[in-house]
Image 1 (cartoon, rainbow, N blue to C red):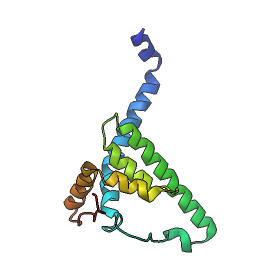
Image 2 (image 1 turned 30 degrees about the vertical axis):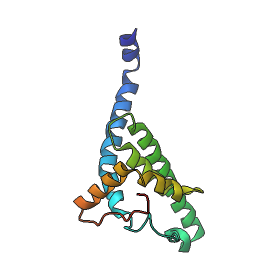
Image 3 (image 1 turned 45 degrees about the horizontal axis):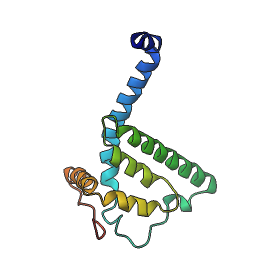
Image 4 (image 1 turned 90 degrees about the horizontal axis):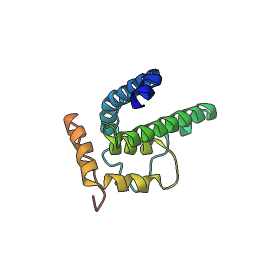
Length: 140
């Protein structure tokens, strides 16, 4: 029965496999790039910097924010999948959350980064790129 199901869905399984490998390779490239771009004081700032898109034409701002949020959702979904598949799930989720706009986002980001293993991996990536370690808020 199982072999019949696999044969009946062979094309779909190939596409799922290709997408999984592509997502894994994509995140292995993108996560370190994004992790080293986090400002050193991002998690210790009292006041958030305004969005880059704030000064743009309203249509460009809307398109930019829409694209940023779409990528954030994509990273969160990929990160959730990587909790059971190969990849850096928690860090991918963190990067996705950092791209999204929603109330309470900063508190959630801080809670994730307060996990010693998450902060250790991010700072390891930053160290490999000769970037200073993230400044952590108290309790990290």
